[in-house]
Length: 228
Length: 228
Image (cartoon, rainbow over all chains, first blue to last red; front, side):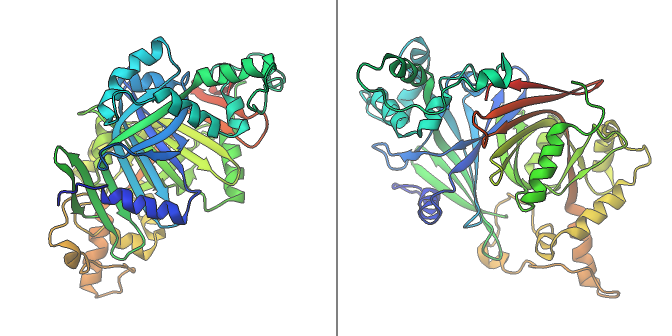
């Protein structure tokens, strides 16, 4: 059952997304190893990045590098995504390793050694990819990354929050304040990449329901039918 | 900011569910302690169970007791629920301890010592609650609990799966086969209860967004405004 091409779960997910392109809110679980407590939050799936090896599709999302999940993923890169596509009644549970691509600097150096495992050329331009992803974000989302640290105490209350910028547009030449906010937001913006290794795919529409486990081995993806 | 009554996050969630009663699919993360790997899957929220202490609402869901999450929660009861209500653009992240109420027998004995912490009368009739919840399930869901072990290899393939019952109705007197299937399904059916201790509530509709942390202490729920 070896597959040299893209795995069947990705073909199914591509098809589901072609029909329901807005069903891109996923839940990502990570682990706080210091307390042995699982965490889970909603994220927006942005795209599949394709590597030179089509059997290694990478899930691209984004984050504020200051959120607790970044620290959690440094300590333990094991994550799982639950992705329920209501339109097709399909659930994809995607386990893999998480990788973070923050702004250039010391933190990025910390992360980049893990990125070499992703099947991309060693000179892949991660900074260009990061900036491209940032530019695709809505003006409202861009403004979210120049707030104080997410999850920290709101000093000054909602009155203080009303002073935050609500939208960031690409700065016009000479607009120093707009440039400062843009640079600040971009400095907190990070790519979040999940490299899938095990996928549990449940189809709830057919009777009887179907469930398939996919896992990646050295020779490509394998699959096995499971009891739903 | 002490609250002696139901916590404000529950009031907000009740209100959201009154408007969007179908948005009850939640994602529950648990931990596989043997491998330090987080797991997450979709579940259906069934109801809030109220205890004698209104500050301690319990989240009721259900499961097949044979699924891996049951073993995960024995080993580590810490869980977190991510609940995104699309209609209101609210995300509730609910952390707490999970409790399982399986069929009577040795496994239940193993679990019941944890249940005493739930703020219910010591003679609370858990079996009546379990059977009541089972009866509320759809005939299709009832049939799902008399399949082979969920997540095990599908022996015999889809042809075998086509022999599984697709619906279970309450058995008529004297229908021995219907009674056998009903009893089998009920024996695998378990309540899954989460006792919330910490809730991270994000409101994405207002500008600026709002985020509030709630946590339960000995004197009730406390809250603090956070940076979103």
